[in-house]
Length: 243
Image 1: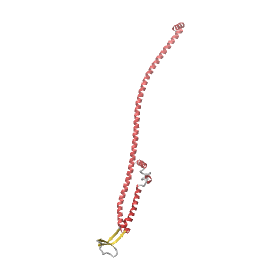
Image 2: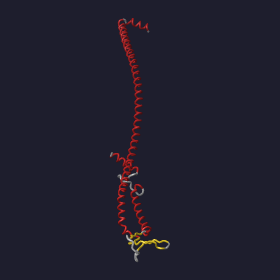
Image 3: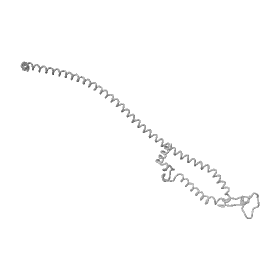
Image 4: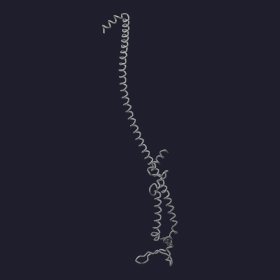
């Protein structure tokens, strides 16, 4: 398994999906910002843009006030909400506090803290879920890359095995043809051997006959010599007549 992971890592490095050493793809190898850096940059830019939007367009138009629980008369100095109808005041409500702009922060910070804690309570599980999803996606990509490498390696080995099998078939066919040629050569050899044995026997018989005739000739020559020794004149006359 470790060998396959190492091969998959080399395959990912060659493919360009990870940096050397198995680290996630770096900007210098990707030709730009990594996904994590890009997300961080977008979050920082969003926070800065949101702060500018709140400071110039939202917060100056906001205000906060609190009303009294009872219904006292309108004060000489203070704040009150008055409802007008046809240019005449109909109803009024005395305010115990009225603030606007950034001064409302000191009044609403408990609510903001409660909202922040609520956001953290909701955001932490979501962030953990996103982190786990990112880890699962990364592991899935590595598994897919490893499976692609294993599939490519298996396909390459299959081609090599098929090539080896074709070579073995060719060798088998050559062996069969060589066996056929060898059987034909053996048959020819046996035929030549049988023919040579027959010729050898005939030559042996011929040699034996030649030896026998040579012996007979030697015997005849010996008899002639003997006759010449006994009857030299007759032998010479007969020799002359025969010649």
